Length: 470
Image (cartoon, rainbow, N blue to C red; front, side):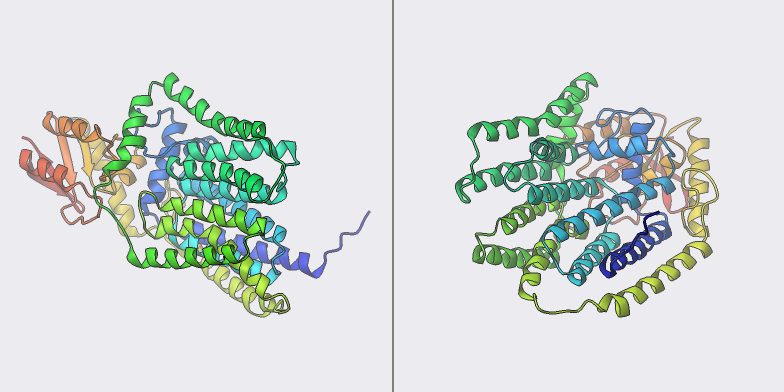
């Protein structure tokens, strides 16, 4: 039997990614129930798993590739805990792709591990599982394959690359269109600027292949008769983000980073690897459309970080700092992992239902249980609608979904959605639960005010005031 021998670098890689994977897993498992980004995206996947059609049966403002992918995996188990396991698997995929890209760029191990750790840290502190995770995975795949197939000599990759760029469109239409255009721009750049032997026929073929996912998705919309709702929610409806959220600090930071990498790309303009990273860095800026907040900004900065570390590495060729991860990084990893494992084991967790084994507080458990009981009991006589950002947290627990109300925020109703909401408000046998203390930036205050004019207070449940007609 052949003996397996690991070099020091391979051993360090195994230890590093083993520790980082454990850290990620327990940070994810240890998150307390309540982040609504997680709940909404879980509900999208579960709705599809349960047979509901996006746009037609529930409101979704992005193209649905990630939702369908997650729903398929939920066939194994449709709990929030398993949804978090999917989240962990996506993180492992990101780690693998980052490692591959940085190895192709011949980045020093310590710098590679540093940028991977920082990238993951930024994501884990800012984001929950949504379409952006699949988008960043697709983007990293594109960069990886472009670095491997710079002269388009690999016929299989010549099909895979445009197909992946097409998938980005049906995963998130706003950033996907820009990513797909960058793929074509790279071909033109290689032909015109780098004088590669690329024919017009090849370019046309690449465009046609990249359109295949969109064509299939269009056929799907026609078959499910959901194309009108898709246009309303995911195309024209994007203009309905009336409350613009802009963080000037985040915006300034992004501008500085992009100016830096633009200058470096100009100085070293004959390096094809630099152009691949630069153009996809610009494409990743589209992650902040239509909202600029820390979540979307975190995703938009991953590719620029790769480019920055590539530039830094080229300026530090003779510096050896390989022992740092032995004496500093590994002990920190182990301490944080042990702390998170202990925290998860000792935390209060929900004992049953769709949120089983998810850490929470006794107070929140009581709120969820009382809300579930109230909705089930009241629904015998009235339709219950929660006019609050937290609506999906409670409805999902009892396998219920109210279109337009379980993402009760401006920007999620489309153009025609508000008309339907007012129609529901004007009809009889309805009860509305309102959080009078809510000040969320997307809160549809006009709809809430309309309910308060038409209805009167008839009770309360937890932090929500109950409004009835009679």
